[in-house]
Length: 147
Ligand code: MC0
Image (tube, rainbow, N blue to C red; front, side, top):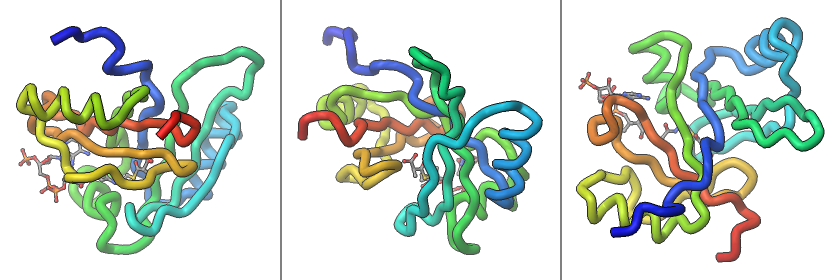
């Protein structure tokens, strides 16, 4: 199979944090990032913020701060087990269905049979960390993609 353009770029790196406001304060006041977007995703059990440079022409991957909405959240479980830190790496894709089919064909287990809704109305799925060298890999098709 042709490997070209299954993935577009690194979309974001997700950090599990116990408290979103405190994490935003650190990342903006100490590290100098800017908050680009903030939302609550009840299905995923997270309160999240996307941070970036805001610089003209910057195409940098973003930093996603993920705080648990409740004790059943996957982020709560991650924090209990590992403490705060890097929870996921997210690759942007042009066509989530095509990339999902290619990954499944190659033996990579995706967590959801059908895509879920992610940040900003995007379509998302996750590859199991056991199939990706110990990294929880999210794949995201931005909301603006034709679908
Ligand atoms: C678990 N493991 C991980 C991991 N989470 N490895 C690397 N990175 C992670 N984040 C490993 C554990 O160390 C363990 O390995 C094994 O996987 C099973 O872990 P577990 O602690 O028993 O946890 P599970 O199986 O209950 O849950 C893990 C799983 C879960 C990845 C299935 O976290 C999940 O469903 N994640 C996808 C959804 C998600 O993360 N939502 C929050 C972000 P050992 O060797 O100890 O067996 S929402 C989001 O990102 C949205 C808003 C967006 O961007 O648009």
